[in-house]
Image 1 (cartoon, helix red, strand yellow):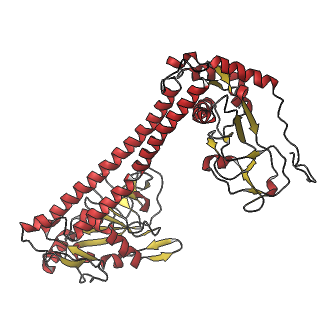
Image 2 (cartoon, helix red, strand yellow):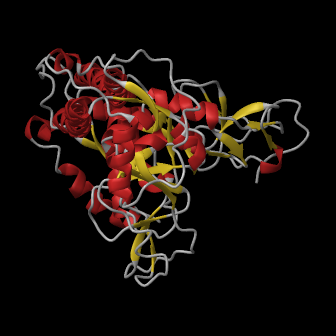
Image 3 (cartoon, one colour):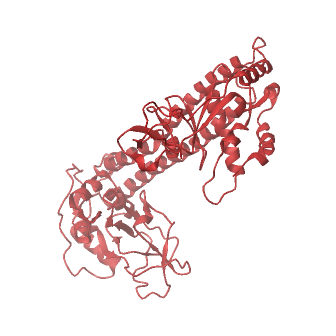
Length: 496
């Protein structure tokens, strides 16, 4: 899009944040004090991954590094050096100070060069993104948005006195460094909270979490007969076969009042989900799939559906307290589990999930055990790899060893774990809120800077009007830069 016809609108919009003490700052178009160099259309057939000269392309303005090399003849005048200011001319109009190795300036990337005795290049680096966002928002396009060097040259920028420019930059550097440190610490919160959840789970399944409860209670874990009776009550009938024995258990010391059982001993049923073809018809019954288990909870987005009169219903409809185990997924996600808590209903589940109906253990405790470091260690041992996916079948799941506490201790353990996990969730929520506040704070600091309110003004500074006169005088007397000269010894031109 050519933005020239709308540049007056941009001038008015961009004046909004420049009030207060900054009202006395003159405004000058970027092209009056900057050299704006468009990239060169190097021959793409000479691009490669390792031979020749590094080539900076538009995608590299985002990443800050290039993996493209050019091994053809070089037309001089299109070099990028560390410290140069670049603008991506398509898409989001990103701005970056180049910090990687020296390279060639490719088309659709623009290099902006200013005289540091006229305009502080770091101030320009802070200011440009705000103006380019205005252009991006004002540019209507159903495909990729394009920026022209003419539009860049017409940007109406404020020009504070040079000493004030440098004071603003120093203050912005200090404040943004503080914000960056805070953001780094906040970004660590999800990892820290996950470590906290894992530590709480391990404390629970070794008995440390409920040590105080045991000090005042003498209850023992359920016997085989009690577990069988509980399973028969939930299932509505006795087992046809004896429960599967333990095949693997973690090397954990558990309290004397606990006992090791297989998962099969504490569930009344294990059932695979439907393999019927689903659709996007939301009038049907939602079907949970492997992607709907996220961080130990059910995610109700990206659902598929089966007709309400599907012939596997109601047998494959979930009940409150059912545990869903992800039996097939990528290696890091297989085995992840969650509890269905009854709403919304009716709900079914797909064949890559196994429904466990608990009888001798609280559903949440079984899920937290399966999602704990112990559960991950077990998955790593028993999962089979098939065409990029891992699989843990129902027989292996039933044979997993589980440290069974007494019924009363299960209740206390579940209460303490629920409280610990809720605390971790609150930390993550507060961290996300704080990150959003940091983003707003950064914008507010920049707005304050360009209102002239971030640093004190000094009456001894050379007036900005004098600086502007000097810029215009020097520009009028400066020869126009020459580009496009082939390097010595070249046999061909790369002009395209």
